[in-house]
Length: 384
Ligand SMILES: Cc1cc2nc3c(=O)[nH]c(=O)nc-3n(C[C@H](O)[C@H](O)[C@H](O)COP(=O)(O)OP(=O)(O)OC[C@H]3O[C@@H](n4cnc5c(N)ncnc54)[C@H](O)[C@@H]3O)c2cc1C
Image (cartoon, protein in one colour):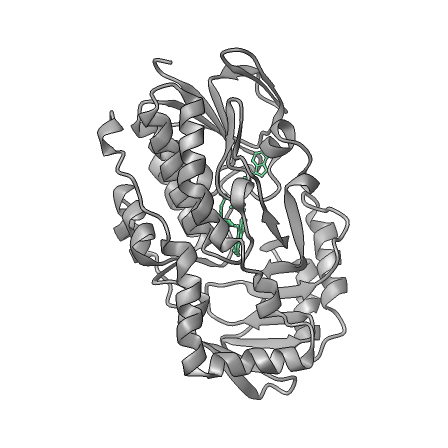
């Protein structure tokens, strides 16, 4: 493989980050993204500790990411009458650097736009592996062959479905959904709970954020109107400002809803296809998933460069390097913490965060998914 050709599916975080590194190592990279452009939106994603900082620095974007930092205010929890009943420390909900997810996705795209080929508004429809290539068909573009295919297409990865098998074999629904909606909320940074439901509003740049407990709903991933109806149904009938907020959801221009789920795979590769980011080890709303995606991209691309064309060796080394690190974040189910199922559970959660002696150890525990890996240095492999 002189100039190995790699196709990456997904242009959010893991995809462009992997593309950045592979380009530097001399690979010829195409990224296919089903959305028409880089998708904006999402909450602030957070980076914490030396591992995340090192990867951002090695990508040359630490300063730009720092410049996009939005401070994480303490979350004031209120009761149905708006009276303060607790505080969730800002450091718990965020890291040292918090960046709106959409800003980070845009930055990573800008970093790579001149170096790799982006195919927006398209998706892979089939993958068929031969002895020395993967033949790929697309919904719109002409068929092409690639040396390798990387699935960076998120929790509901199409590449994973095509190359590994159905989503139900790899993704576990953790009993909750989250909704982000650009609503007119006012400036008060507050969070309200009732059993199995949470609503948080406030800070200027962030969308309103809801979490609700639910069994798995009929899939509606590409149907925003249906997702909005599901969200309205699940969140209606509440107290506090819930009726007024929920009434705005159908008209919200910015809207994103997904299940809180966990992807668990024993092996992140099949033949010439590998997964990175949420597609491989996603754990929605917990465990520094965006930092993990950047670290995963760094390691996967670095191992591919180091193995000089031996993708099996590279994928094995990637698995070995990242598997334990990724599995730590898998222990967190943020839904339970954000929307406890019962009133006593809500009181207990609020007490827990009010107790300084408990918050300290808890913070240490949640630092682990950010820091518990030793990074290799692949800089000798860079050719540009
Ligand atoms: C719009 C948006 C908002 C988000 N908001 C939050 C949030 O508020 N809080 C949070 O914790 N996490 C959020 N996430 C998820 C978060 O970005 C990831 O958990 C994390 O950053 C890891 O990123 P990833 O690149 O692996 O996956 P993702 O960020 O999920 O990106 C996957 C990408 O693949 C694309 N894609 C999906 N299917 C296909 C396909 N068939 N063909 C081509 N492309 C495909 C998607 O459009 C997306 O751009 C959001 C993701 C998106 C896309």
